[in-house]
Image (cartoon, helix red, strand yellow):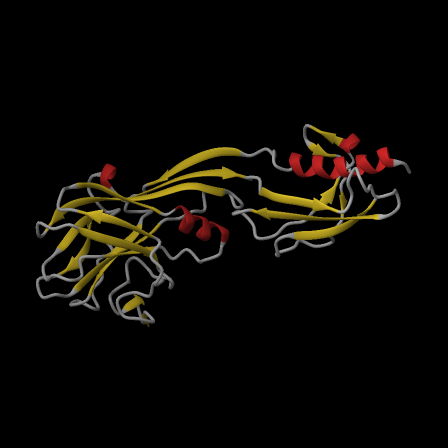
Length: 288
């Protein structure tokens, strides 16, 4: 076939990939602020290694008067967010009620790596009869977010967009988060409200903005057919797509003739790769 037919093959491929960037995606947001019944939070205390504080209205952070550590643990249920969504922003907030000393300092947030039960967790045990791998809580060494806390009562926040996305994707199991800070000076600790706090407006919050069914980002497209050297009908076109998608680590390429494209997508899809690919970029062949 002549040059014009080969050009139409190239255009068909490009049109399909560009249309794939415009699915029925929509932005949404949710605010999680569980009460005492739905909430899961507690703090653990080094000098009371077998005591549980899951039903108290406070989350202590820092050192006791004897220099023992206190660490808040919190969990938010993400099941109300559709699987496959892209987290565009996530902000964790707690309300500081009191400060034992006049002090300020950096508080780091990281993810807990073992499951725990609110009414049973202690410094030594994550559930009754089961110890933490490390006393004082087992958590990631990577710091996901930091925030500076002072002695001023009010809200303090940590941006945890990437961590929330990893939880939603299943890249990491969601066992919640731990706050680490004020572990240098005896009697320097902060008191935060828990989900059992009397004032419902001052309980811990996780604000999440997300896009359901968000499209991937196409970084580049290359192929072996062009206007100068078009691929004749009946021969293969090799093309490669480099992409990124925070929703999913896999991709599959299909080709659609431009005459079959409509507002809903493509009526006739020809997959040039038989399986989803987890590597990037993705390459395949299509017979014109």
